[in-house]
Length: 472
Image 1 (cartoon, rainbow, N blue to C red):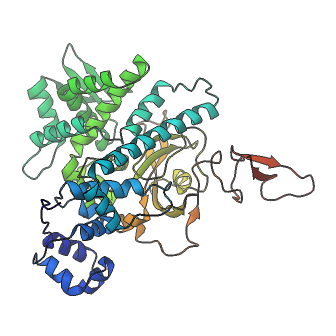
Image 2 (cartoon, rainbow, N blue to C red; image 1 turned 60 degrees about the horizontal axis):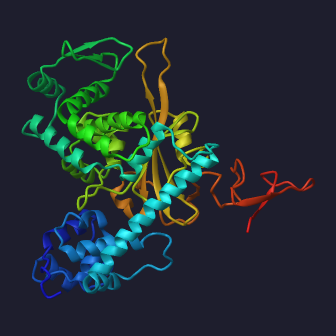
Image 3 (cartoon, rainbow, N blue to C red; image 1 turned 90 degrees about the horizontal axis):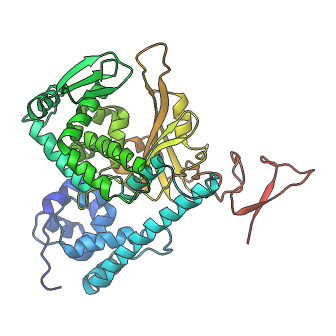
């Protein structure tokens, strides 16, 4: 313990305070220290103690991770995240976490690893349970479900591929860090001898390998065309890495592995258009305003949302968000959660969730403050989108995307600005799906939860035509 690096972080501490418009007295009160002590810390006259560093990490987790910390501080942060799981009734104090990380580092590391194994095992059991409940008695997922689950269990982040895509983007960008469609075409021409042709087609993208010609449907929006270019750049430049990742993935079928290659290429295309660290810093600066980020990086609203959900690089994480895409029928066609909220894989999502309303109201951002049955509160943003088909004879695709975070990160999430987060009555009481929601008093319930027995009375009737009691 005597060899721990003394941490001076005055400039960063002052920036955290100023970004939130706090006076020194207000910041000192949050940290439970005196104003004079805070002033000394901000002027680097005194180093941060381990206990104070943990308190800062707890209060300002996104800001704090950008400060270089030693192994003990990193372990303390990992412990705090693991012990924040709702399965633990009482939170540990910052001092207790620091003592555990300092005095029992081996045990602390094993505990963090064990909790990660528990979390993954729980998710896998939920997936199997969902499959059985969806009349898939074998419990074997379909190929596209396998791929979706693979990304989910990978935290929607593929480190090697993301870093390679980031370097690839930097090699094609100008001095200001801008990546143009012309630069993507030049890369394909000079590095891979591929000519790009834009023409009207029913195919979004077609590649003639013999002629070295890439044909892209000109009827797509500009953001779609850029994505198709980035996709082919990723496949041609990072194809070997993509193939290796898919080969070593534990998937049950060849079809799933081929689908994973496509998913990885899509992932790499997004990482090329929105390079990790550049995009993460922009997201912080813009407070995760998706419209603004889409404008800055010339991507679609959905692409920017999806990229925000993949910012899971160790020691450089983005805002922990959940992301999903829901179609007109309520099917969740994309999903990822870096929060405690998990999604039902089969069946309808909670009808009280704002995303369903967003599907019917395209191009308008809707915001919701909600609480799940475990007591965790979230800020949701949802937007209905219409993907044009390019012709009257083909129906456009309509769906909605949703993005959200837990309320402790609300200051980082611009969509929380219009919500009164201190009101107990303002939070909508939502669940994951009716099948597993324990709320028996919900007026919107479609069917009873799987662990409840229904009781029907011919003469009494509530909002739903039965009462419920838990099966022991």
